[in-house]
Amino acid sequence: MEYNVRDYGAIGDGETLDTVSVQDAIDECTEAGGGTVCVPAGDYRVGTIQLKSNVALFLASGATLIGSTEEEDYHSGGTPMTSLLVSKGAENIAIRGDGVIDAQGSEFMDMNDVFTPSHDPAAMTAEHSARQGEDYLDPKWGTEDGPVRPLEWRPDRVLYFHECDRVKIQGVTIQNAPNWTLHFLGCKDLRITGINIYNDLRIPNTDGINPDLCENIHISDCTVITGDDAICPKATEGLGYEGSLENLTVTNCILRSRSSAIKFGSATAHDIENCTFENIIVRGSNRGLAIQHRDSGSIRNISFSNIVVETQLHTGHWWGKAEPIWVTSIPRHEGHDIGSVENIRFTNVNATSESGIVVYGTPESRIRDVELDGVSVAVTDSAKSDASGGNFDFRPTSLFPPVFESEIPGFYAEYVQDLDIDSFHIEWEEDIAQYHSHAVECESVEDLLIENFKGKQAPRSPDKASLAFRDTSDITIRGSKALHGTKTFIEISDSNDARLFANNDLTNAETAFQGDGEAFMKSGNILPAP
View 1 (cartoon, helix red, strand yellow):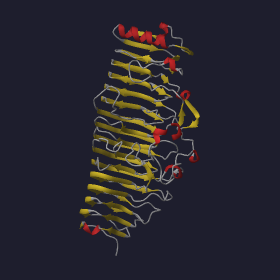
View 2 (view 1 turned 135 degrees about the vertical axis):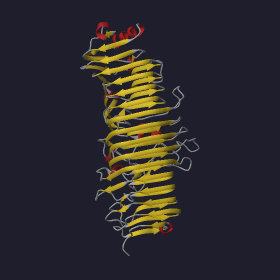
View 3 (view 1 turned 30 degrees about the vertical axis):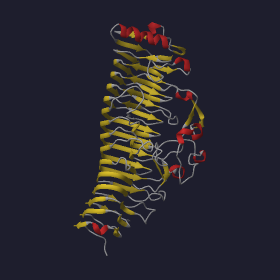
View 4 (view 1 turned 90 degrees about the vertical axis):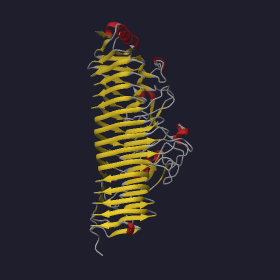
């Protein structure tokens, strides 16, 4: 059964508020047992629309739902969020078609004013940059990347589904979000296929697709371009639902973000497990593939494969420093309970980046069982290195100053247990900033295996070793090759039980070892000429 919103009085002229007409069509459809509510070509200005069980909302080609800019036209539908489209406790819901949902995000922003910590003092608690002082967010570094400043009020979500089952969103375009775009909380059996999300890259908090404490989620064939995280699995506390996030598949997507293209967290109060990401392209993002673990839940069994990543430094109050892969487990506050991160896989990842990979745990939460297989990183120069490069960025945490000066290796690991790096290749652009350093640097790592590595230190840091290990135990390095221009291949200190150094080709290195390198049991290596 079809219900045409025009038959319920909708005008579709872009000026008349058509909320009641669209809602009446949905209400009658669900009361009759279900069917399709058709929105024909036209521009329909609406406030909050409540989606209900057994109803498919079909947006025809040429149809646009335009979000009202008036606060009084919105409500929460009995949920914690004020949204343009909302559903609570419903089942068998669909939104499909070739039409558009335009939330008019720029109308809720001052597009000529850049967001700074002075607009939100709490956002900068304990944050600083040692390299650039407290002014590292100063507009002098540039304002073209935003973020622009939100006005006093904006809707919480464009689409929000609260404890709904069997939800399908297919084919539609969602654009110009003022805040999170798609948020699913406590939902089961979700299928998001072939949709486009086009948000203004300067607008903050415009996450693309956020499954939160959901089960059995399939996201495929989507393009997501947005100012904040593009796809962001979460386990949020305090929204009236307890559970876990599990069984998520994401395939064949193109992502771009001013924050992370894919990010777990930082809301991790409950468990997140069994998630796969495959055949994905990431372009021009602040971070590529990120795990931001801060709370008492655990994250486990996560797989990334066949992914192309491009990351860039950006100016402004965006979290991230162009890391292609970023896995962190840090308590949100001192004394804060924190779970574990374990069994994380990266396979066939090809990255072009203005920074390096970071895997960073803490004594409170060592990251366990991490594998990189067939990961390559080409580190390039950045026109914005003075603005935001040369820093580690571990926001959000108050455990220590979360933005601080640091050398930037091609791969950095700290407080990790069981780290396997196979076929990791690192290349450096010749004129990159001098803060780039080792190809691989590990500190407080237990049980480290590196094999089939190819690389050298950054070109403007000849005093750095290709591989540097401190306070690291159970080290095996085999089948690896020093590239032309390698100064010292391995620098090792305060470490013990260096297990095996076998079948490595160090012909191109000037020096094989510095420090405690003699602790290795050596076999079949081709060493530098004496």
